[in-house]
Image (cartoon, rainbow, N blue to C red; front, side, top):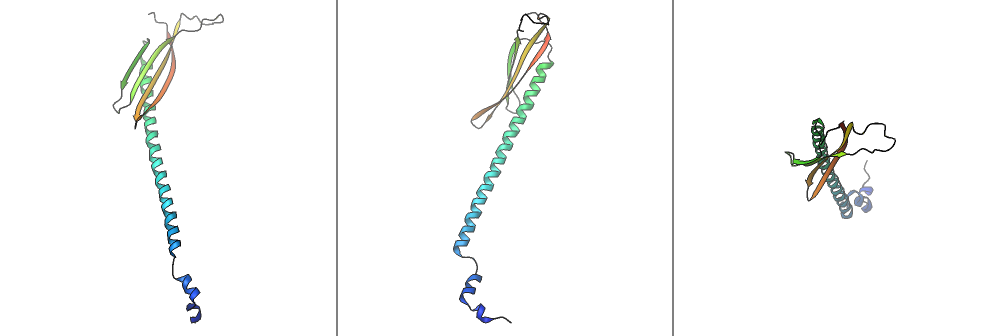
Length: 145
């Protein structure tokens, strides 16, 4: 059996009426802040993904150009540059290094030559220019200039 005096009590009806205006406003503020944070995280994730994609493509382009240079048998001092089909630009530099001819040199320095090879890949991201550079050394037979 339902007690009418409990249902008719003003205090119990007030608790069962629903949400107050202040509770609704607090819930809306929490929801708004949460949505803003979630959207910023999503936006940051997309930006990081795009940046990672560009760096990955730059790495592959640099490795491709480095392998192309290393396959060439005739090394000379040179500087070349160009552009890939997707807008990335590259610069390659090959420099002949003079070996140190100290007193304790065990190898005859006249029998080989050493080259420093650098490949720099650049691209534009908004108003900024980004770079990725790799370098290596190549030892080859002595070439008379």
